[in-house]
Image 1 (cartoon, rainbow, N blue to C red):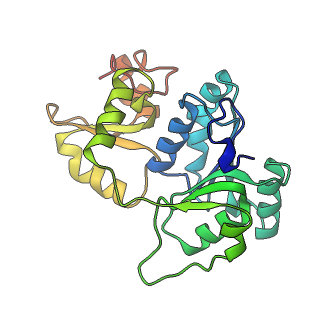
Image 2 (image 1 turned 90 degrees about the horizontal axis):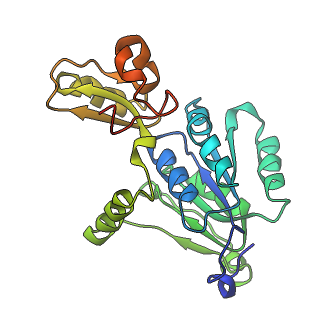
Length: 242
């Protein structure tokens, strides 16, 4: 675990839990964790019931392994609540996670985070809490166990510049999060699919192309076979494919 006095330590000593990670934001946070200068030793990504969580394992397992990071994914629905809790605790040898990100706007998810956080750890309530709802937090969590709870109301321009610099410096590849592409005439269909949570990753619309049907990247071989060879590992969108 990491305490406040240890914040300047360098090396792979952290464990990270990403709750409700099946969607595009989950892909983003997993990728960001993997490509950090000092990444965590273990990343556990969970989702409540959607099979979308397996796309994270499919896309990032090999990348994580190449960086000696243990990436594990779980679907909560596959277990009883007691079993699921025990599994997550075992992932850290019952020490708790040093860093937890809650992507869902859910009281239940935040309560789960409080159960799995390590002493001196940080919980990022990224998804917020639904208006009018409250989460009870035992004072000992803050006073004795020294956990921190943080949140954000959005990014500012300096954050965006920092992200752009990382992309330009090839420290992070946003194409890893692209799950579907389409032409301008597919925009309406894309918006409807995104609103329904159909795609686990990002959708890119090319306005200069009119009649390109909305196509999953992993199905490009069926619809646009000559583009398939431009993909990385036949799965990841690339600049060459674009």
